Amino acid sequence: MTGPAFYVALSLMSTGALARAADLPPEAAMLATALIWAGPGQVLFFGALAAKTAPAAIAFAVSLSSVRLLPMCLSVLPMLRAEKTRRTTLLLAAHFIAVTVWTESLRRLPDMAKERRLPFFFGFALTCVGLTTLTSGLGYWLTAALPAPLAGGLMTLSPFYFLAATARAARDGSDWIAIGAGLALAPLTQAFVGGGFDLLVLAVVGGGGAWLASFYARRVVA
Image (cartoon, rainbow, N blue to C red; front, side, top):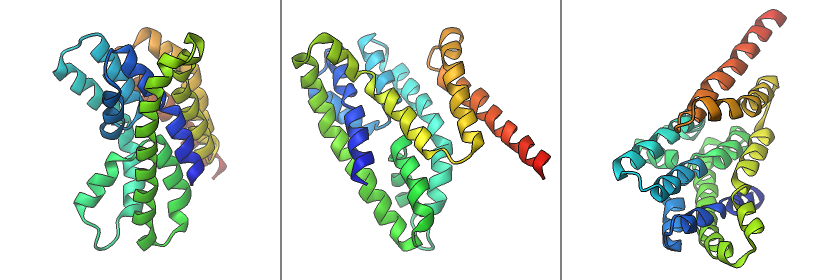
C-alpha cells in the first residue's frame, strides 16, 4: 500500500507550486492539503486566491468541486459500515475519499472482513494525507530551487497521476468508455463551459453516457 500513497504524495507536490504562485507561505500549501485534500479543489482554491476572489465565492467554488466526490463516497461508505459503526465515523471517513483512497478502497475492501475495513481505510487514508501534507511543503521549496521548466512540470503531476489511478481501477468496458469520453470531451467542456462547471458537465455527459452504453449492452447480451 506504500506505492499508491507515495505516488499521490508525489503528485500533490504541485500544490506547493500553486501556493508559491499565489504568494502564500508554505504553511498554506500544507494546510490546504490537510483540509481540502482533493487536488482539483486545491487548484481552484489557490487559483481563486491568486485572482483575489471573494472568500465566500472561493468557499462555494471549492465546495462545488467536491460534488464530484459524492458518487465515490456512496460506493465506499456502505462497505465501511458495520453494525456498531457511528455516523460520525462515516462522516469523518468521507473527508478522506478522493481518487487514490477511493480506487484502493474499491480494490481492497470487498475481500476484507468487515471488522478490518475501517482500520485499513483510516490507516491508508491518514498515510496518504500525512505524506502529501509534507510533500506539499517540499513542492513549495522545489519550485524556487528548480529551473522553470521543471518547476512547471510539477504542476502536471496531479492530472497525469489521477488519470493513471482511474485507469488502474477500471473494471469493465463502461469504465474505459468513461475514461475515453472524458479525454475526448475535456477540451470541449473547458472551452465552452469552463467557470468551474466543466468537470461537472463532463462527469454527467461522459460518465452518464458510458453507463447508458453499458446498460443497453447488457440488455442486448441478455
